[in-house]
Figure: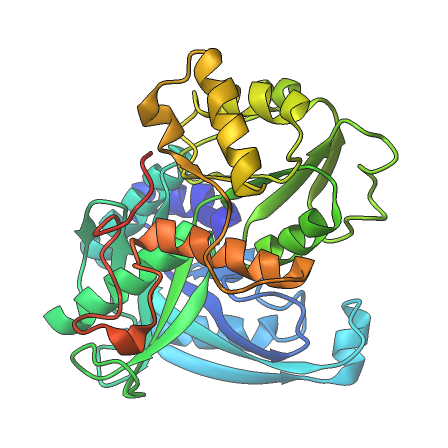
Length: 375
């Protein structure tokens, strides 16, 4: 829906009622992903698309009806193989489209707030009740530190807010199912959460086999992955097909020319002082969420001594996750990548890294509750 926000904003400013149709689920192949949206005004103006043309006509008719009835509708459409082929797909699928009239002042104000936040580059999630034991179409905006709107129950609001912040951390969109008061492992209420945030970055330095496995799991976790190495024979697209970007440059030079924010994770896998030391001295000046460094304990001790010589203080050294990863007994590059990913998740959410069966209390930690990385 991001591409529609400027037009919706203009309609809101003019007080124009409209219905918003959003793809909330896809099964099989379909022309548009969850979050794709189309808006229809009472005068018949249309913006956006939910299927690339396959079901737009019916969505238009239902959207027009909702502007008269005021009722939110959930529609399911099967896309035939022929229609899918015409949209450039190999086979058909099924999409679910939530069609919600936006006619009240509260609707207009909430969408105005969403549009303002997205325009300002603020990460925000919009949670919408799709079906079940909660008001269909009820919406809640979730930001890092505050919320706006309600899904009709305080417990449901709390559970969805927690999950929406998790999706925001990944820059992902998804669907959750809950009990009527937010209970986990129940199916009474379906809530679609659409996030508006760029995917967090994973910077992997050192184009070795472990880097290939780490890049793959980084992509799986929703990161936008960059692999960087100064050696042109190693930093190639063929060796890192899942990475979003492969850069041939000295690591510290590249780092100083690229954006690193508080959601960025950095994995230094070179274990070579001529690369590691200038790179780590630079990355410790950034707000990176996680800085993992590969190497033996002897290599770690030597690296720490060299960093002290460059002027890195003890608070900076404490930010390093080194040797990188949790103790899983990993041996292969793929197992090591799982170990690194587990530590990244632990740092993000403040987990202990211990088996859940040994612990009591809440399974999901509040961000930074314990064991979180210094930022």
